[in-house]
Image 1: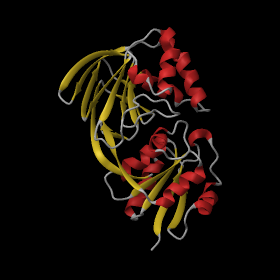
Image 2: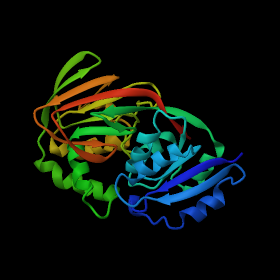
Image 3: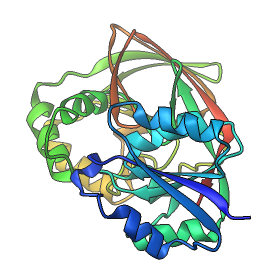
Image 4: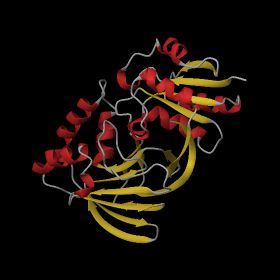
Length: 290
């Protein structure tokens, strides 16, 4: 019997047109193996609703056609089920797809689905919000909030936003508990990495692994503004972890207490949260086609 596959398409992710995607998929998908259906999201969180319908209808595969935010919505439903998830990267950064080695070329990504190679990866939960690639507090979350308001998103827009905001942003104090050990740190930002990169090949934790059962708590310490280009260079050169400005602590059970409530980003999506942040790793909880 053919495997039923549902493609959930976010029509606005990455600012890229997707009206011709179903025709492209049918041309490159192995139709002897798959019976495809296609649906477009129409409002925020719609991808989650569609993924839940796919679970109820016992689909074999659900494919996210969008960015990390769309992946998050779908994976949050599929996590813990036996349904496999595919990814066609169509976002601004495509952090999880890049970390998994999924091609940004649509045809090659579709051929990956044809291979039916299933890989289980870890996920995490942050104050009841699931994430699969990256979460963060501090400047990272602040920029995600500003970036979400832009009409033209992408690496250029992200960098422009960061440059505009960095001079007025102040570091914060954090109390951390990681697997029972306590730390007090002043930090420019804290990233919780399941994968190695934010997206666009910006590697915040180059040695992070998606299936080791651990999260990398990446503490970026305050640094002189004049060092911002140097920090950026190391971020894209996979060497940020070797600098004196970054401390990485691995753990499964993480508590972060900050002085006040504020924005946290969950797979790039900004969310307002209280001062206490609790994060737990969920080992090998999501099945992906890679």
